[in-house]
Length: 290
Image 1: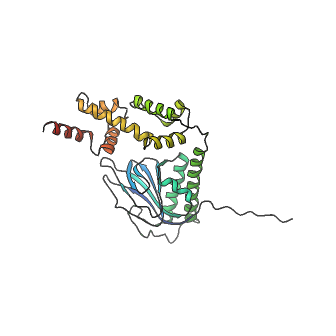
Image 2: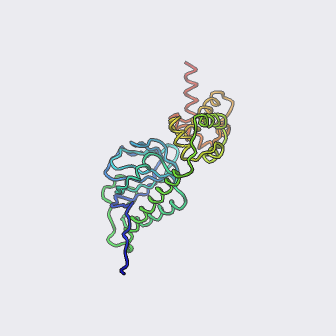
Image 3: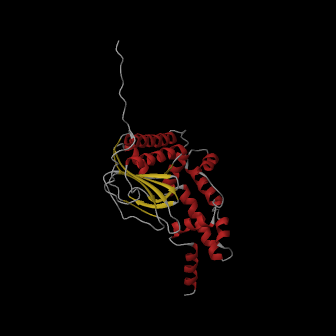
């Protein structure tokens, strides 16, 4: 009897690559709106950036990844107060399972970060510098590079995407704990009363007997935003009240509303109010003097 050889299923295949960049952006750096026929991976190695795209507009924080879909209009902006390091990889992959990662950032695990680091290293061995020129249309390959290095880029990218999809599927397949309207009201009330402290998704899931997938989905459906965004808005609203009172300095206010540092407080305040806490107070005082 002959051996029966089995073929491998190709559920995830990266067919082509456009570029592998590692950018050390300056403060206030921004790109113009771009659009191309391949997907684009964004990963923040340090700092944060503001992303504007068809499927997601918001902050991409440190250790988070976002994958723009092909033909998606997108741009990014770096904050005024902080320079950010960002990995950008353009690639072609037809797997529809990746589409979900265009809609919401995902925080990578240590193992996934290690995979991404290895991809960057392989990319340096295959492609010629520079690695930090925006809109580089033709990233040249070296004439010689380590055996199989370009294939390793493909394999490791596919491995990373499979890991991401598995993690997503595992979250979705957790025990389904339906969140009733009454329970949702309880969650919102809890946030309104305790937003000054440190609140995590894990804590909310434990207190209200649910899981992260159900919580995030229900909360966004009811409130129209993420749990973190809701908490931050409560913090900023309270911070504005304290600023107007004139009784506290910025460091004290940051602590009173539950931010880990005045720098982080100022960053989030500007993200939501489009001005710094100091500028906000100047605006308020100038209005009162009219």
